[in-house]
Image (cartoon, rainbow, N blue to C red; front, top):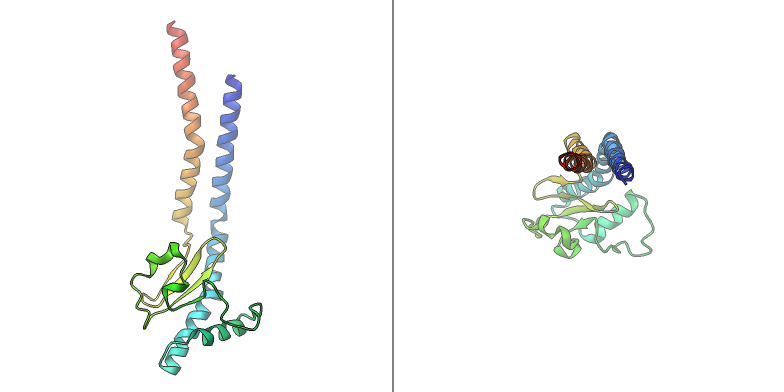
Length: 176
């Protein structure tokens, strides 16, 4: 039974160490992907709205934005209507916000503000006009290091527990 405990603990630890190191080593690629996403997806939308507002002294309406969006990104999958979008890229009211993210929009004044939001497969990434800032996943080396420590902790805690268990058991056997 002891060998099985040791084997399973080593298997558990190896799994979490492998995951932790793998995610840590993936950090530079993820940081680069995030920077490319902002540069190639969010910034062009923000620049369009800012330029439109400068030229026209108003924000674009949904149709103006989505026509530009369709043509710029060459995405003609929306059929005939360029306004088809449940949670749109161009956000001018709370109606276009995922309910989990509503708190991020509390300071928005929808008469003068807008947001750009793009779905990343598991979460939305945003640009907020009222703070002139991006709200993205923000992968960083600090976050990667903290994640690595968490995974190493998941690996080491069972090893320490097993060591104490067998040490205590051995002491009981010796004292008996």
